[in-house]
Structures are given as structure tokens and as C-alpha cells.
Image 1 (cartoon, one colour):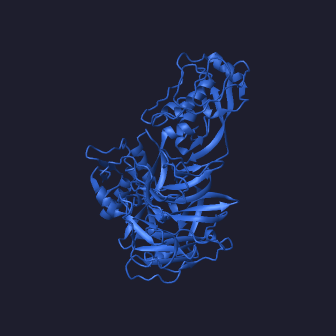
Image 2: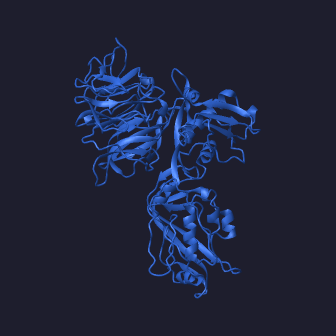
Image 3: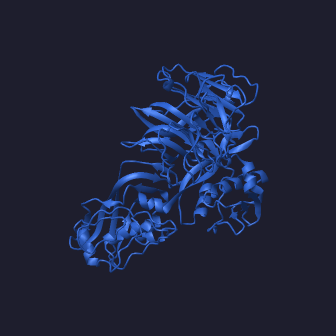
Length: 612
């Protein structure tokens, strides 16, 4: 499917009917139907310049079934806002009831028609045709615009009929939703994070609510900002919904005539809502505007402020970018002060994130910087006041303050795994101040959370787990966690939703695991690298280890991967994408500033981390 069209006259109605009668009609997806010769499957359109808008052609007078089906599929990949042109290929009843927004099915290539289309009516002049549209599924995007990788085959029936009055062919039976090849999907859709607040979660001691990213896909050239506001107001995706809340009152929507939302020449966006002034307090309106601003900066990075209006077009509130950052904790807006790693003596050291030198690392205050314990891995709290270290060859987890004179105390978690590789993973902190770590002991594998990094370790249930956890990294928002799970010698990168104890005594659990990198069979290192993005070192089947970005919903990211680096053992990234990537490789600690090559930092260093 796509926008490429062959020039010249269309096939005559008689020729198109002949094709159909022979059962040779083919949904080729992107190429026009030839006037002669064999019909072949055609892959989806190669990806085009995203700045080019594509519009569909309506059906020609007397077009045959082959042209109708192919034209309809082309129209699905156009930038027609309401699919009005696509509906012209449908019979009147089908055009009225078809719901394209219900789902998008993404196929590896353009959809094709299975041989053996059945013609109804007279063999010489059929009045109807039924064909099966087929392909290999890659993913689906549901009615909430949430992406999910899906494998297997795709098969669905399409029925066409010829109007006895005017002789025109139209599609009269088809499933809801749209279908297209992967290349067309990448050209037509873009991934955008919308933001909600983690339920019953605040950052201590500020009391800020925590913003959680909910990635969705919108049509990139069909009024995307208006689409995103509507999606935000409609609420979170089903997967994330149980652990987040929205500040918008139930039933909030854009005013009916709202469209073409865009910042003005002062980089201010005005959003007209259907609310009355009495429905919203000032504090609540600030949170509403914060959600809008965080969401739309994905599409308009220069956006500086948002004004929300009521049903009478009067101002409810306005919010600047600076005020939004103080109104809620937002991972990608929190730039870490320091990079941390273990030096050649296994002491915890730090260096300023913006440092351009390679010799400025200093030991941190407190026992972890004094070398009181030989450490294998570390994690620093997001406020950079505390650190957790795994020592004793992976057996013990210690937590201490990064202040002079602090004591180390006894281990808070211990592992009895037979080897270092079977013991504690690298720990990680969320914005609440909770500390997460997994025990890889094959006899008693467990996932733990320590409230505020100091309470008694709580075992976290993972009811959907198939295999055992070999690595774990909690997202800054504390609502999601990335797990590397091994089974039958293969590893999977999974994202789980964190369900906190709600007072029912059920405890904390990680549920509804889903794949973030379905094509990887080995994952040797990972780090969160954005609000809905991770940096991983992994290998596809039959491939070599490589560093790459992945989205939490399993979708494919645009843009290049970080430059190649041999012997990568650990990686560190920040949710703030402006901060340099750091890795522990054959060359020790190295970093990758934006627009530069990998630079050596410390040839004897190991275990690099940013706060988190």
C-alpha cells in the first residue's frame, strides 16, 4: 500500500471484470494494477520524506474490482483526515458503519490477496466477489492508539458488489480498522508520549506528583497536536491505566469546533475545553495544563506555555514551562549532577555530568567512597543523597548516605547464589526513593523492593513470569520496571507494570509483562534512556552484540543507534537525552557526548551509573 501510482489510462471495466471472474484479483497494496501481464504481490511503499503529504484519488468511473480494492488500500495510507476518500470506495451502508479508528494492523509487507477469489452471479458478468486479504503481522495499534507487537498470519475477507443500477463496483463488507505495510506505517504514524500522574505517588520531600509517559501512535501529518490532546483527554491506555490518574474531570473534551491546534508566534498554545470555570480549581487546572505541556512538547519542542480555556472561551489558567517543571516530577527534565562509577580500587567515585576533562573523578563522601567494602555494582538515589552498593562478590546489598562520617551498617539483602553471576543484580532507585534489586539465585530467584531504601526488603510477586530474572531496572516514575528474563538459554526484555500495595494486604507486584524488544534473544546490559525508551546491549538470532534503543511498547525507533563499541559490559544513560551516554567496555569507562566519538574516561573504572 502507498501513494505511488502509475500514469496513463485506467483498465477498462470489462478488463477488470475479466480479472475478477478468473479469480486473479490481487490486493497488491502499493502498485497500480497493470493493464496486462502476470499479477504479482508488491511490497509496501518504501519510506518517503515525512514532510511530503500524500492524498488519495477517488475511484474512477467504471473502475473494476481490482482497481477498487487497490485504490481503497492506497487511500488508507494517505493523509486524508477523516478517511473520506477511502469511504468513496465503499458501498453506502459500509461507508456509514465502517470505523477506521478502531485499530491499525501492521503487516511486514503490503497485504496480498489469496488465490481463489470467489465470484458470485453470472460467470460472464459477476455481481459480487469475495477475496481473502492476507499477510504477516508485525503489530497492532488499538483504539486507544497503543502499540503492541503481534506475530502470526493475518487473514480477513473483503466482499465487493456491483450496483445493478449504475454498474459501479464497491466494497460492501470489510472489517473495522485499517491495514497497511510496515513502511507505510512508519511513514504515516509517529510515536508520542502523553503524560499522566502515578497513583498515590509523590517525590519526597517536595511532594511533587510523578509524571508517567504513556506512548501512543498518531498520524503524523493529520493535525497531530489536536489528535494528541484528544488522546490525552480520553485517558490512559488500558495497560497503564490501573497505576496512573488524570487531573482532567471525567467527560472533559475539546470543544466541538476545535482543530488545528498549534502554538502562536509567542510559542503559546491555547486549548479550548468543554468545562465550566466552576468545575476546576486553580491547583487542578495547573496539573491539567502540566499534562498538556509535557505531552505536546514531544511534537513542539519550542512550546513555552499553555493556556486552558473554558466552554465560554475564557481563560481557566495558563502555565509556563518553568512552572510545569516545578508542578510535577518529570524524568526527562531532571538532569543529573554527576556520573558515578567504581574506580580501580572498587571505590565509588563521581564526576560532574558536564565535565569535559577525563581526570576529575573524586571519591564520594562516606564509606562507599572510602573503600570500606569491595563493590561490584552501585546505584545512586535520584536526589544524589544516598547510594546502594552490591559487594561481597554479589552476596550483599548495602545502603548508606553520601555524607562524611556515615556508617555502612549490615547488609539489607543477602544472596546465597552459588556464583557471582547467580547473586544480586545491579540495584536501581525510583523517584519515590524506593530501591529495587533482584536475586538471581537459581534455587530461590526473587525480586525485592526496599521502601525509601531503608525498610525491610519486601518480596515482589511477578505472577506472569516465565523464566528467571537476570537483570532489573525500575523506571524513574516507579510505575514500570524493565526485566531481563531468561528461559531455555534465551533472554527477553520485558516491561512490567508495578502494582503497589493498596491496603488490601496483597503486597507489591509486577504484572502484565510485555516485550520491549521481541527480536532480541540476548540482552547483556540495559539502562533507561528516556521516559519511554531504553538503551540495551543485545543480540538478534544469528547476529552480533550491538547497542541500540528500544521503546517500552516494542515499537521500532527512528534514528541511528550509538556508535559501535567493542566489549561492552555495562551502560549508563539518563532520561535527559542531552546527557552523554557512558559505558564500561574493554577500554574501561568511556562516554559518548552528543555529536562526538567515544572518549576514554578511566581505563580502570567499572560499573558506571547515573542517579536512578
